[in-house]
Image (cartoon, rainbow, N blue to C red; front, side, top):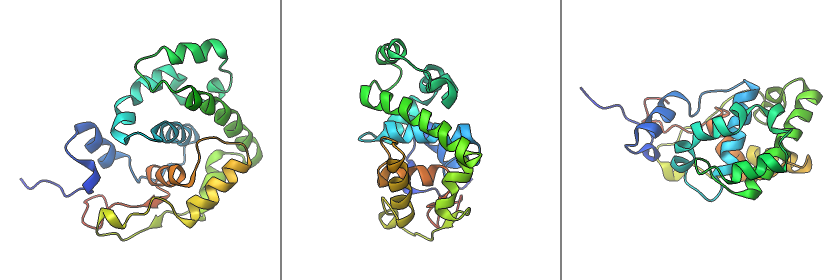
Length: 185
């Protein structure tokens, strides 16, 4: 049986393969899932995606299944608890940013009716279909991720630079960066 052709970055890790095959680049319109990707992409800053993905289930348990309404209520006691949790990435700045971002996420939901409605405006409600043959052709940012980053920052969000926003767009299916040789393209 012939092995499926995948994007180069996937490698042989079964967790990465499952993520690539089932999630990466699939359009997401569920607010909780969008917040999850926002949290995980912020924690990825300076780290590999495989590191974050390997801790995803621990994050899910530690952070109330990525429910923004719960995370927005976290206090110093909860921050201390998270900093003691060896199952997650214990970065105080990223933990505090997650709480701030959860509060702002809820504000956007109130303002736009959903975070989905707000975030997808940066791609005019559609997935941007790229046609890349090589991983080296995939940028780390785009005009759309620049605009998203700028708007999120103006609203007070943390860890939302253009590169993080572009990774978020890839994860949430706002941009299709599967290589043309990949079976998921």
